[in-house]
Image (tube, rainbow, N blue to C red; front, side, top):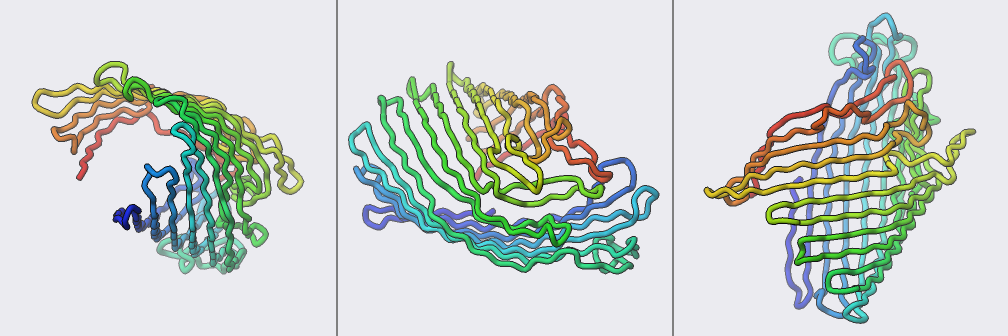
Length: 436
């Protein structure tokens, strides 16, 4: 992704421009039934083109009243196609379906932030942002009428399906959402090494569309999602930066949450985007980073988290009380790197890190035992040879050092997806990095 950042002075003010362009294209064919049998095939294609531009004007940070003002623009064109089929086999009747859509997203934002230093110890920061987002979609889904037949060539192309196809879902829609978001943050310096802060903020995520449709009844436009957040934090640096200690406690209040509801219908996995649920999150995070002896760097992080949908109904089902997706109650990481300088220049760096997390769920609506992952711990190790000048390095690594078997995802039951996806086993490799 090409990115360009440039700065210039307008008197005492600094003008910053950040420009970025990104292009992404991927196409693949898969055995989508996840079994050794020839049951189903899957196809996916996506082509994305993005560009963004931001301008920021900043006053000197040393001023008692300092500020930032800016403008942000984002544009994306997305072309996507997915298809699935059961070809000729003795287990599943032949079928074919294909979803194709073009989606355009455009966003404008004006933002500003003010910081006033009442004293050397106490400051107050306030930020305000207005965002306008416009999205449009042109979607079409077709499926076989009667048992599907296939001719020669690529099975995923509609022209190679020899039996009639009927349109099962269409959407040609355009929507615009806009809103104000803000934050207020008082901060107090306890000393030159430690400070505390309290942050209150409100944000929103714009609406969108359900691209995983199966019938016209699953076509949907979701409303924006809103978040009100409260955070109390402590940050500190000790012993000339050799020890950093941070901690925070937070509470998040969500409304109109956008949800991806996944279920098995007629032996097929169906994904549906919807919103309307309310939820809350609260917890705490702790971080330590230290250089206890020369050339040894260690870090530790601990997260404690509670998530809950306080009001969540879908049809006649009430899922209130369910947990958020992929949000373990406890997570922790510990790591260390030791650097050995070489007489000829460069260095050898020995490193390891270990990550542990408790039970987590894959879906908001189905949190039965088969639709979740138990807790697990993963460890990695690496040896890096850093060349003189520190611009190039070669690393030999081992990921999942203990060869732990753990679930990375699970799909609801259906003959094409009654399976469990596992994380990578022990993996050994070499990487080369150069910096210019």
